[in-house]
Length: 131
Length: 287
Image 1 (cartoon, each protein chain N blue to C red):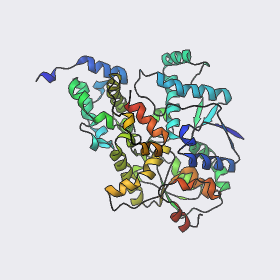
Image 2 (cartoon, chains in turn blue, brown):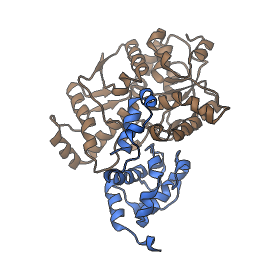
Image 3 (cartoon, rainbow over the protein chains, first blue to last red):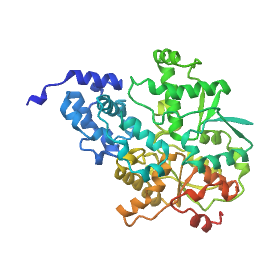
Image 4 (tube, one colour):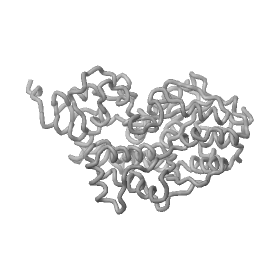
């Protein structure tokens, strides 16, 4: 039961980085319903927000969900409470990246792909997934 | 007439066909695209962390520079368009940010430079476009794929309805082709996930292409160089994951327009398409 202890500092930090109010979300799940990448996530967008609301730091920082967010903003357009969910996902990524925990290792990327892909794909991925 | 324009890095590299066909289309309607001198990268995707102000510097310096030349700038790349418009909005909405940013800029900037997409320009000059059409594309059924960046967030982008946009269909009608509506036209192709989670991009792109085909599209047309890559280059992988998938040619909107305006083939850049567009164009006597 020790995990239930809320990390209020984490909640505050997420709200600060994202400029969103976590109590605005009433867990209707519409973000997850419309998310094109929810099927690839271990923890879905509304569950990620639930971790944030409860201050479950360990669970939140372990989930892979936010790394599958392409910031397409379908959830943002559909949220009945006006929560900008991609900003919350970015807040999780930002916490990782500022602790020097990136998702991708640039030298590991397939060279053939790099030569073929448009620069904006590669640069976007670098800015979202590397520190 | 001259129109100031910001190409962004991809139009000079992987999206050359978009660049050359767009120039040809604008020339055909009597407009010369005047490139912003000494431009640089906008920083690609808009950073969503509110305390990340560094990422606003590049887009705002571009806009400040553009404003010195002219009050509006044409931006054909969807990522650049989105990033520049969002940076503009952020600056206008938040005076604290405005002050911080202006301390870092050589020239002061107010967030008022108009960022214009070619589809907005062609919408506002529809009669001019119609009057230049030389070839009938009436039989060509075109799936109009918007993607994310032109539509969302609506409050900041103000391009069209984020769930049921029509500007692209109207454009396709104005050049004489038949637009096809399909529900997934506003959904994500996987974007930059193609770099680290290609399976997610393959699946997302497959779903929306399949959706376009199910609604009768012969071809799918897009504005964004990243969508273009995912929809075109990933079709081999889509076929592996879904053996019943039938390839479908992808075009930039300006390539289809250039065909309608009767441009010669070498201005279209069709040879760069991974999925051959020639069969369908020959079938409808468009080449």
